Length: 164
Image (cartoon, rainbow, N blue to C red; front, top):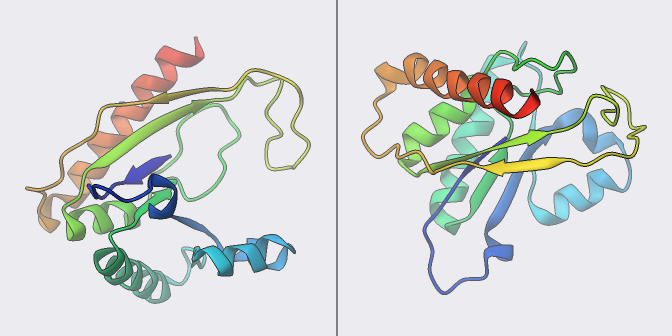
């Protein structure tokens, strides 16, 4: 998970957050209704690249206008193998466009508690590791793939460190 974070002062942190979620989840009531009320950015599958591009462009305009932060998973899906999955480019396009810091956080869910792709979580202790902010103010679009892979490499390292 990552947060692309605004540096607003004097504003409640609670009021400054948005999320990206799969459009599939809109079908799950009351999640769909709540999502619309709190301003979720609903995504479409990777097989619709033009629509995804528009969603991220609209998100950039919204975030620039409102000063809100956004949480998203660069993997774009739940990966159940215990490994770090492929990173999509959307989060990195957004960070490059907004020139705002990325605050990565690694969530270590014990295998015995992990519901996989289901909803049946079992008891266990989940650890959340908030990592230092990554400055994106000098990122360029031509470096997008390199930046994406560098950040993914960090997550792979944290996965090895925190799951062992």
